[in-house]
Image 1 (cartoon, rainbow, N blue to C red):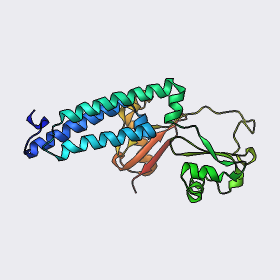
Image 2: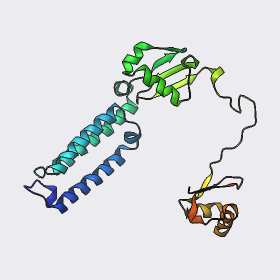
Image 3: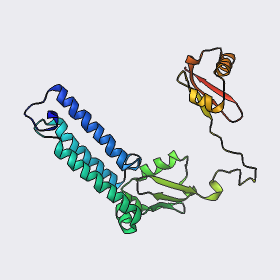
Image 4: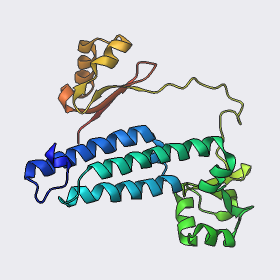
Length: 234
């Protein structure tokens, strides 16, 4: 464990061991903090990411620094982060302090210019986000909100929304997600067993459809009606 403490010089193996320890600790810390810290980088998450990155970087680049202090500091930050997340879930004033309430960027088909400044975004960025939602006309937007995580949620006027089966009073169909049977040239035997499908049947279907072997299949899925969809490598 000499690599864990401050030294005048470190061997290549000791540098590698430091990196491994830091990497494993960050994995554990991320697991403790949960997926939110990865998928939703909000104010609390951003502060945590910057702090942890700065603390762990020093002992990985300076042999004169031990890892003990960094590990203790990061552990403290993980605890504080967990407390902060808990408080944001249980204490509304703290939640509003960390994650501000959404506010409108577009209302009744009109841009709220003062809120663009509040969100610190330009009209170009607003239009770009609307285009991603396939919205070409601002006047079709009943409401567009700037969310706490820095995204924009848009709501069209009812007359511009896509018709659904409920609107047309059609009988709904049960949702079914196709099951992947072959992926990147390899059969998923676990799914075959779950669906009670014979391997020979699958191979015969692939050969009869495209006259190719399983290894030539990029993706093959099957739906609830036993419709097999096969996608080959280019």
